[in-house]
Amino acid sequence: MHRTTIERRLNDAHRRLMRARGELAVLDEQLEVVNEIADDTRIRALVAETPVAAKEHDEASRQASAMLRGRQVLVDQIAELERRQEDLLERLVVGPG
Image (cartoon, rainbow, N blue to C red; front, side):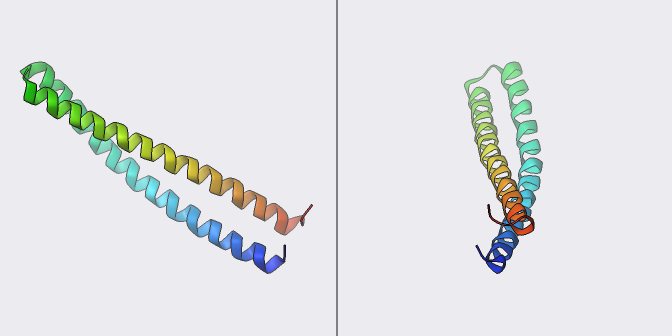
């Protein structure tokens, strides 16, 4: 692979990695809020013992779980981009082989 192609792919991987890390930071902040809401609704459901309170807790818990799954997908993408970046850096410095 030509050096310019490697450099272009490396730049692309770096941009995607920075964007994904930014998305992860935002998602972590949102997840913190959603987890707090889920905890609050859990306590209200325990105290109130009503179907409505239980339903609110279930919905908040499902939302938190969905966000955690999405977070894991993003973490996996970041790990893959980091591996790709390392591979490209190695090819750039050492050469193919």
